[in-house]
Each structure stands twice: as C-alpha cells, then as structure tokens.
Image (cartoon, rainbow, N blue to C red; front, side, top):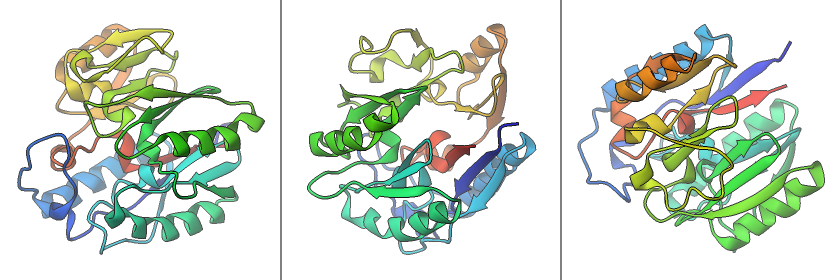
Length: 255
C-alpha cells in the first residue's frame, strides 16, 4: 500500500505581511487563516494522509507555503533557492524535516533560484515555470539532479502568475488543467483542459478519485464531478489573498 505523508507548516503571526506580486493586496485575517489551515490539514488526514508539521518559521510571513522550500522526486529532496530574500529563512527547518523522513538531500545553489511551486510533476515529466522566482540556472540545476533518476525536465514560460502551479496542475490521468487567461502557453502539455475559474486550476491529488480544491471554484468542482472525480473542498480565502492555493500549503510524499 502506498504510504502517504505530507509536510505542513502553521501560518506565521505575520502572515498579513506576505509578499503579493500579481494581485491587489487585501487585508488578511490571520486568525481566520489559522482556522482555514487547520481545516486543510484535517482534510488531508481524513483522506488517509499522515501530516508532519515542520517547525514554525514565525519570522517568515510566507512560511506556511511550505511547498516552495523543496522539490521531492523519488528518494531525493532538492532544497530550493528562493529569489525572495525574505523567504530564505524558511529552508533550514524544512530541510531537517524532510531529511528526518529518510530522503537524500541536494540543493539548488546560487545564482540559481527555484521555488517548489514552479514545479509540476506528472509521472517522470517535470515542468518548471521560468518565473520571477525560478530562473534558467535553477531549472538547469534541477535537470542535472533529476534526469539521472529518470526524469525529463522542461522549462515553460511564465509571466502572468507567481508560480507555475498558480496557473496549472494536473488530474490523476495526467491531463493538465488551467485557467486560460493565466496560462502563457499550453502547447508544452500533451493534454490540456481549460477550467472556468482561476482557482479551479489548483488541485491536490488525494488519491486516484479525490481532488482537494478550493471552495472558490464551484463551477470547476462540478466539471470534475461530471468526469467521475470527487472534489474535497476547503476554504482557503485568506491564503488566496497572498496568491496561495491548495498545492502550496503542503509537500506531498508518497512511498
């Protein structure tokens, strides 16, 4: 049986100072965000996932977006290299936590930059957003680390959103889903399904049938239901104010 684990990190008390790049800043209700984070963790656990809480990074407003700290492939965890200086303090505790789970470690080294939110894995195909957070050198370093393990790494253009997985994720059958207005180029993907809501482009695969997704995309949830999937809906409105989505609030591990 597949063992499913997920790294999570509770929100910083300074979450309302998180970075906003592509959207207008709105006030963040930190207390509500903590409540929503707990509900997100409970949704993972109710679906059979063991959650592992990474020690808090209270001085890092964006620390709750734990996915950006690393890329996990096989038994290797590649620790990222944030372009945003305010996020560099998030790495050390995340690195210790993933090492404690038995993973080998590698690192993206400057001048390379890479956020895990820019990395979409579909089997052995790895798409990496070339963004304000992830540069050519970071993509090249990731390719050198993952291709010996059997992965195929491909950079894709990204200018309209913060991270690649802000624009697209993938269904269990490998179909890439995205909101067209936020996708620079869908041609790199073998199969692409346009969805009617921006937040409908973000799913976490709980298993082959269940999709964790945001409550802000009810039309897309109905489409997925018609395709035979079961949406598991969580309200993450306070994280969406910081360009967050369901994928960036955890690092999913399958062994």
